Image 1 (cartoon, one colour):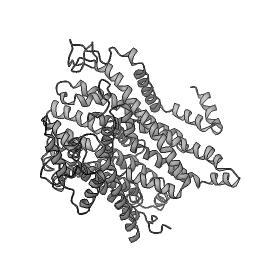
Image 2 (cartoon, one colour):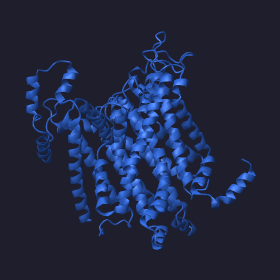
Image 3 (cartoon, helix red, strand yellow):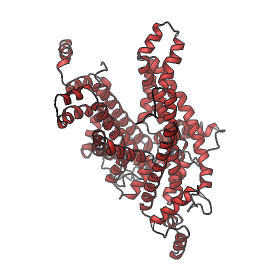
Image 4 (spheres, chains in turn cyan, brown):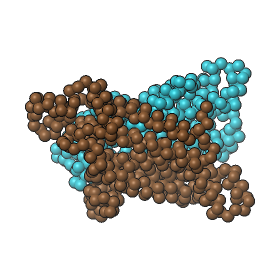
Length: 294
Length: 316
């Protein structure tokens, strides 16, 4: 972008909508763009895995069992001669999908609860807050483990297990946001001018709660991925023949001395992905915040 | 203050009741009982009559509500019953045996992450945009994106197996650092991240405050401003996160203890889950709940002491 364009954009800053300002700031954050690139690239790879992956995920190569990285198998093979890189591409489907779906589920539960608690106040608020107190006093991992054991093994169960307590964060956030917005001058002014509750909710509360929720989802996705990784590491994640990044790692951790590639590559891919999501989320938070100059 | 303590104690009892109910029924809902698990573990068939007798002995034949009531009555006296797995040993005895290991790892982790996290946080907030700030950001990004168990496994491979600098696993108490260096490093990823982030943002917020500018303008020397005006006020948000963090650290991480074969409570509880050792699962969950509630409570009191604007008593 040349300087003339930048000049026009910055002088017209006052007239831009919140969304436009957000995109402008995000586009000009190089770190965020790299992170977004990584995230999108991975999503494309896992979606088109059947066309991109060099092998089928279950395809066995008995010529190359436990093979370290070679020209034929870039990330080596496992005990059945299955190609690690192809399995990582397919495994990413589970890891990424669990991360995104768990966040969506948590928002679907947490957002209405937080909003209702904040708006209604009184005993409704009290009841939900006590529920949150109780759920946040149970060790998280134990609850995940119990839920996964209770529910039938599978993808949906993992998402449910992660959402049982996961909604608390969003509910707290939305409730706090609603409570503080309710007392702002512009909401009071709107009410004073005769705006009805519906108008206030739609054009003030929803609009101002949206950006922290979007940021919280983006930062929550790697969090959920990490929780799924924890379950998989303990062998309670997705069931074979399906796989996820850390399920592979958990399965072969005992063989790390002889076949390091079965642990190191999934670990690298998982960490890179989580890093990209975190950086993106941080940048989005900054881009939404009008007080920070980019 | 007295009223505040009273309200919070009541709250704690309510939370403990609710958590015990939740854990109790969820745990019994998990398919398979303790003696099925035993059969599976020993790969031997235990006669049906024997299983029935065992269940009768431990009261497992009674309806769940009765079992819960009996548990509650005994628990009020501080008696959590006997383990189904480690026969003849009481739960209290088992917790006394395993918990100290977790406490030691937890305290060591806390000390290490306090030094690193607070140090990095202060250092980067005082030098925004310079190399300490980048170092802080780098470390926190690393802590964020690498799960502790992944880091633990990789360290175990590179440091212990490849380089042979440290033993791969084991535990000899805090006096033998070679066993706890890796567990403590892996365990402190989360705490370092939280402490670094909170300290950095708290200090940079305070540094922008008007009273700090005034203090500088009055001509106070830098050290005085830093120590009294900045640190003291920045401490409050850090204290709020440090409390609950301590509680979860000293109850042990099942990943770290599992990977490095430390016979702590986190690992033992996870094993108990597999063995359906109901009393132990319940007892260690309630221990966690009690600790975390107490730390929230203590944190609130410290908060009020540090910040005179906070008053809990005047509610209504």
